[in-house]
Length: 150
Image (cartoon, helix red, strand yellow):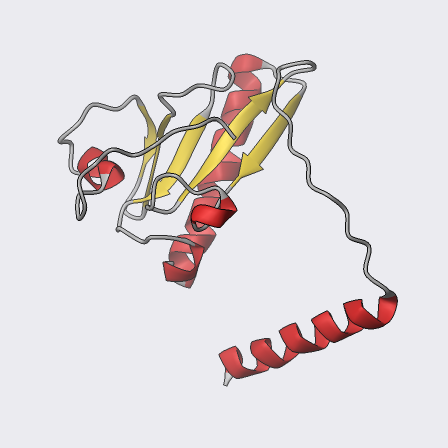
């Protein structure tokens, strides 16, 4: 991911300032829960961020309604970006936590139009654990899901 460092002082969120109208933004969509605006660090023309209006640091801090609405708006924006810019592909990207690649700690999703040889590379090392280990991982997640639903 491109290097970006949010230089806002502690306790000040650049996206909260944007939502409040305190800093300029090229807004493409807004409703009660989310706002979609042009990323100032355009990867390709048409790169949009879809963010919650309420400050939520990451995915785990969202309500179910906010989570659903972000994806609905990302879908809507992706269709509009496809119509406006005719990219040969689209990448949706959402990062959580410093080690996950998050640089602005206010939940947002990138809608990135993609083209052949655009210089964007998404890759990771494949670990390919044994089937028994995958089953163990699945059991751990199922157990956590059961606790979440209780």
